[in-house]
Image (cartoon, rainbow, N blue to C red; front, side, top):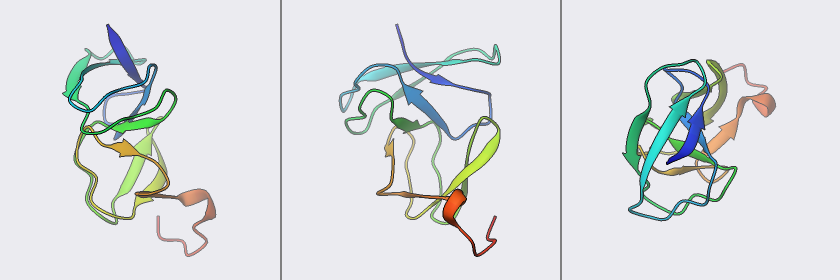
Amino acid sequence: MRKAVAHRLGDHVAVAVADLRPGEGVEVAFLDGSPPVRLEAREAVPLGHKIALTDVAEGEVVREYGEPIGRATRPIPAGAHVHTHNLRSLRWDFGGRR
């Protein structure tokens, strides 16, 4: 069963379509028709929140919808919950650090 959805191949994050438990296998569907991928949730990810599809380095721009959505404020391993504790929105980044 697919438990997360990403918009396109190359995105760093997918959105959980069910509550995810640590250690749970997660199949991710891509809306662009790319083949699904599987990963393991490293921590709890609530329904509607983001899960990292790949490792993201601190300071790296995070992409969703093929667009930059934020900057990692610390390293984010694949399968981790991505939220305000490790991602700063670019919407409020007036320093122009895109």
